[in-house]
Image (tube, rainbow, N blue to C red; front, side, top):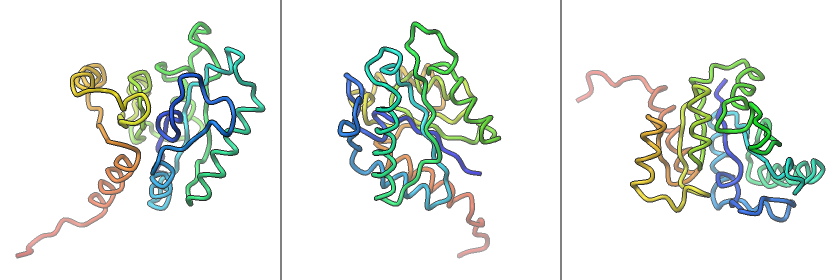
Length: 196
């Protein structure tokens, strides 16, 4: 099974400092849902792993979270895309839970749920915290320069690379998808021998 883990806010939808609190506030990043569709059609299963401290802070209730995710899935389906599941941490940093990124609990739970070796699982992230969670879980970290990462300059990216060695950087989710699909095609094609 080929699995990818995606952040939500800043990866699939536009990031909001005040949290996405209603379905109408969940606005997809241009090209992001189409990128998931391309990955799905190339045989990848996609799940979301997202911190949602707004729940723990009382800014949003579970009924609203479910409505937001129903809206997200409807927009996904309209683009021929599919998410297998949404994993989220409802806690605040003060709760000191194991599932809130940068800790790897949520990623490890995904690995257990799917019975998959996380070393083969790419993670698309727009924060250092999410990259650290991916690294701690043994996943393959990818920085997507949308959402909170859009404002980073090269020196800041280099600082993040020092913290999370081996991170790959992509302009957006479409570029991330292109990278994975091209790598998959290279791995599948036989080495041309004797060609002139």
